[in-house]
Image (cartoon, rainbow, N blue to C red; front, top):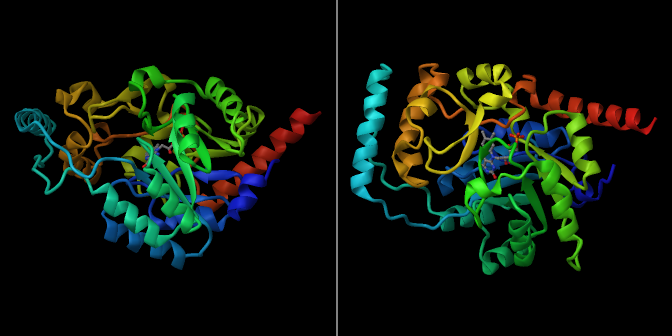
Length: 359
Ligand SMILES: Cc1cc2nc3c(=O)[nH]c(=O)nc-3n(C[C@H](O)[C@H](O)[C@H](O)COP(=O)(O)O)c2cc1C
């Protein structure tokens, strides 16, 4: 196995547990990192103080290399308040129909300010910073490098990978159409950037070969076991990034109803959804998705902020059918087990698959 990416980061395995905002608490990140892979804190929804607090918890649990993932967004958002009022009516009516005793409210801000999250990330100084939804500014990239932080940019097309490589990212994480959670797309319409990983990986590897420096390509989307990791490597990936596979871990903070629904998810039930957040994301087609196909056309993060309290209430009530049950297309292959065991199992399977193909 090509361990150059792993050794550059000081980790044992070329395996990344994806940052999954809202579902990757310090216990999960630390367990993965302590097992020799790269744990990642999905900090997209966290205020700066919470980023610093959770980073300290991760360090206290093992002090191994780990990543923090952020969403690249403007600091302020203008919302169409007439559309917000209409959306609130629709969402509140749905909650009433479903018997959930919760209603929308106006949040103090639509999302944490990216510039403040970024400052907290710099202060926390993880080994790796990961970004999605856009490219950071040159001064921000320089600041991360000055602090010795390795930068991974998320891309869903070759053009986006080149944008990150041009900006100076150390590696690109290619998010195939199979991937769970929000699409990282920032140069195209989400619908135009649904490229399967089998096409996306070799195309990107070829494009990155045109750069004077080495830009490792990371594979993300639908990888659930060691066979998938080997397939990604065969297509030129330097590491595999798995999200959904880690949702089944007891350390993961995803709602129990969501965890329960994952192994039963048929691949045809995993669709692209805008109704929870205003941004295209992959997850289970459930009752909420049925009722709110485009939920009012509000953009991200406005709709995301409006549905957040509803999500919390649905989780508490055990209503998986009203939750954003993000997952990749291969969710049916999820194996609930402690994160350290999953890392060891993935690497064991990877080695077995490699040996069996060699014969
Ligand atoms: C529940 C969930 C939340 C996610 N949140 C983030 C996030 O906060 N930041 C990010 O860069 N990617 C996020 N992703 C996408 C992952 O980084 C990765 O691309 C994806 O999980 C790979 O596909 P897989 O889920 O099939 O393994 C999320 C994915 C899931 C399933």
